[in-house]
Length: 361
View 1 (cartoon, rainbow, N blue to C red):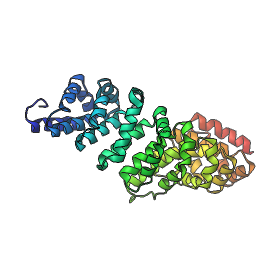
View 2 (tube, helix red, strand yellow):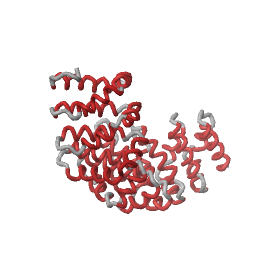
View 3 (cartoon, rainbow, N blue to C red):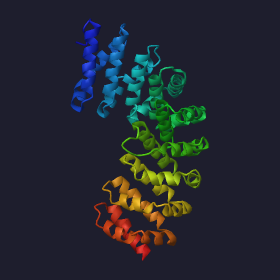
View 4 (tube, helix red, strand yellow):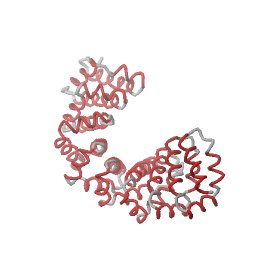
């Protein structure tokens, strides 16, 4: 049916295959060499509705992790880059969405950057800043966010004066602009050489502002996504010693403590990471201790989630370096809780809880 001369039949077949690609088993069946070659031909069809349907199907296929490697090997990334520059907004939008999905694969992102860093960076920022279509702009920014996980691309953004563009978009009130731009900044913060540069653009303030959302049933989904991105960014920025002192001055300590009780597991994990980093700074450890960080840390240390448990028990260990904090930990039932943690199935928790008890005697 995808080979039909009737555009309506072809579109219908592509839509059906796209829906099938959203299923784990169906995705494997759809992603084969023959169909990918056919998609490449359909993406160049004279009928633009067929082109849009082909790229939409390709984007849905690229959402599956197991398809991203084979699709890149078949030349799909190069095709997406080429079609992203087309005047047809539908084709451009689906091409960019497909490219952002393919770039979720670390090897693909690295390959895309290595192929032509200057051209890809220039193209994506031109689309993100000049397009009048919000979806085209959004997926161009998501592509930038994915590629910021690669140091060469993040460095290109820094040296090419692209960070101001990202910060302007991240400080916007439009969610489709704010989220991907802020994610790009959070991903760039994964590289230690970028962190001070990002902080000079007020990255800490940005993430603190994004994190201050009310968690509840009526909270907008995009607001919770703000918190997810903010917690990720803060956890990475706070891994640099010079930034930990500034974090306290902009209210990051209180924000991180609040995020420890978020309904989102990803946010709680990132908050635990940020706390384990921030508490390496003695003044921060004392301030967080007095601000009520002990109870959520003890709860996290026995949450059953290894990621949270490891960072929470490490943060408690950092807190207990000072005698003042040791007394506060005992005052809040820490001795009993640590005794309970000795029964944990997590060896890291067991080891550090025993050390903590020895230290506090």
